[in-house]
Length: 153
Image 1 (cartoon, rainbow, N blue to C red):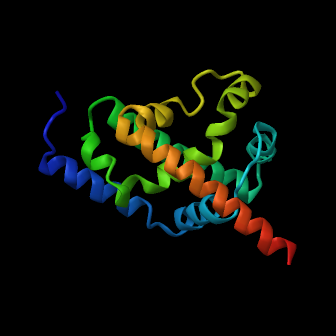
Image 2: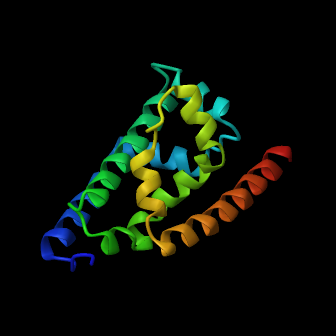
Image 3: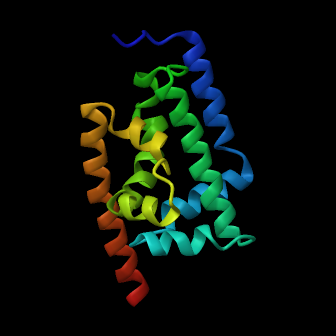
């Protein structure tokens, strides 16, 4: 049975939210949400292997942040119910929805079967999370199409 949310859980959520407001993190999050739309593992790896590039730093910063937070949930440090509230974890579902279609290929090419494993576990652990992921996959496709239309103009 899941543990009941505590004041400490709420305080940790607020602290984690505050970390997202740091200036460089805001830039990284904005890039992930609005500009980074990989269509394949290779698209992802172009950025991941571009050491020294700003986008590489942003990729690692946001991926690392959500991996860390997901590990808190997966290991019982942070209440899953509070974590899954869309106001906190919506961005996590967005970034995972962007890479989910080619996760298997990405892990193979990285030779790392655990790449994004904590994120995947946190996102797919509950029925609500799996449903939310499907919703976000559809939303990402709509975002991708609208972005392509705007770029074609």
